[in-house]
Image (cartoon, rainbow over all chains, first blue to last red):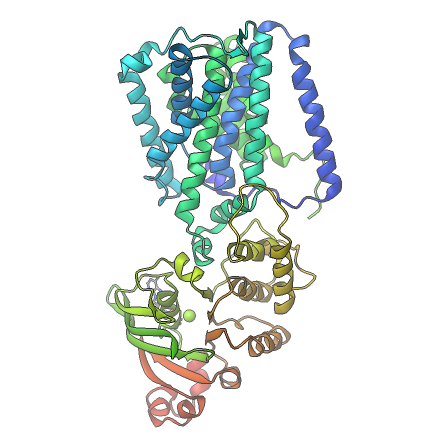
Length: 329
Length: 252
Ligand SMILES: Nc1ncnc2c1ncn2[C@@H]1O[C@H](COP(=O)(O)OP(=O)(O)O)[C@@H](O)[C@H]1O
Ligand SMILES: [Mg+2]
C-alpha cells in the first residue's frame, strides 16, 4: 500500500519561486500552449481525438491532484464527480440546450453538488480511512448511475448526446472539438493553479503537512477540507462536461473505479502536488492505455503497472522531480 | 480578575489519572510558571486548556467565557495559543511560510482564494522571526533548521496567532545558552496584554521570569503561589523537592 502513502509525501514547490525561474516557467507554458493549439494541423484526426482525451483526463487528474497532492487527501472515488458532471452535461445537452457555456456550467455545478452531498462524510477522516470512504462513495454513485435508467440510460449509458454548439453552430469535427476542450481545459487548469497558489492553497498545504497543528493555529480544518472537496468536485464535473463533448456518450464505466485509479496513477506518476506533473502523468496514462494499448495486445494496463512501479522506485517525486531547471534551495 | 480559569480539569489515560481535579486561576498579564517532575501532567494540562485534548471533566474559562465545549481552532481564534514541547511543524515549508500561515489566519482579513501578495502578513512574519532570533533564516526549510531553531520557530508561530493567553511548553529545552538568553529577553519584553503560562525545568529561569508558580505533582496541584512562597513552602520541600536533591528531581 505504499502507493497510497506516496501522495502524502510533501512535494509541493514553494509558492515563492525566484523571478527568473518564474519567467522561464511562463515561457515554457506559452510554448506548450502554442504547440498544443497547433497540434490539429499536424496530426491525423485519430491522433487529435486521442489528444483530446488526454486533455480531458489531464483536467480530471489536476482536480484530483488538488485533493491528493496539495491537501493530502488520497481519494479513490473522485471519478464519481466526473460522472455526475458528464451525466448532467449530457442530459442538459439532450433535453435543454447544447449551447456552449450551459453544459459546462451544469457539469461543474453537478460535480460540485455531488461532492457537497457526499464530501461531508469524509472530512473528518484521513489517510486510509479517507481512501476507503471515498471508494465506497464512488461505488455507490456508480451504482446509482447504473440503476437510474430513466435519467442515465442505465448500463447502456446516456446516448444521442448532440455536439456542443458555439453561438448556434455545432462543433462538427475533431479539430474544433479539440480546440474547445483545450480552451476550457486551460481555464480549468488555471483556476486550480490559482487556488493552489492562494493563501487558501497555503492553508491546504498546511493541512497536508500537519493537520493537528493547523487546528492549533486557528484553522477549522474540516471546513477547509470540505471546501476543497467541493472545488475539486466542480473541476471534475467540468472535465465530465468535456468528456461528453468529446465522446457524445456517458456510461457508468466512465465514473468507475478504473477511471479513479488511473487518475490517481497519473497524479503519482506526475509527482503529487505539482499540478503540471499530473498533466504529464495523464498524457502517459491515456497514451499507453488508448493509443498503444491495442498494439500491446490489451496489455496496456500491465505496462502502466510497470511504469508505476518504476516511477515509485526511481522518481520518488514523480515526473515533476525531473526538473528542466534546478531550483536552488 | 483572572483571564484564564480552570475548574476541576481532569484527564486520564486508562487507569492513569494524568491530570486530576486541577483548579487554576491566572490573572491578566501574569507570568505564570508550571513546574513539576516529568510525568506530572504539565503537558497534558496545557493540552486540556487549549483544547488539543478533550478533558474528561472540568471546565476552562477564557476572559470570563466558558470555552470548554469549543474546538481548539475556535479557542485559538479567541486568543489562546501554545507551543508544543516537541516542535511540530510543516515539513514542506520554510520558516517564513510557516509563520505566514499563522499570521494570515489572524491578520483580520479573509483567507483569499486568489493568489495575492500579503505585505502585512509577510512583514509580521519577518518581524516575529527577527524577534525570536531567526533573522537571516527566513527562507530555510523547516527540515534544515536545528532543534533550537525549531523551538524558536514554535514561539514565533504561537505569537503570530496574536494570543492574549500564551502557553509555552518547555520553550527553552534543547536551546543553546545564547538562544535561551534571547528567549528570556523576548519573554520578559512581551507586552503586558499577553498573559504567559510556561512550563520550565530550569528553576533559575522560572524564578527570574515568573510572578506566580503552580507546582503540579502526580496530576494534582501541590501548591500555587508566588515564587517566594513556593521556595519557602515546607510542604513543597518535604513532599516534593526532597532532601536538598531538588535539581535531580526536576531534571529527572
Ligand atoms: N497520549 C497519551 N497516552 C497515554 N499516556 C499519556 C499520554 N500523554 C501523556 N501520558 C501520560 O500522562 C502522564 C503525564 O504526562 P505529561 O502531561 O506529558 O507530563 P509532563 O509534561 O508533566 O512531563 C505521563 O505519565 C504520561 O506517560
Ligand atoms: Mg511535558
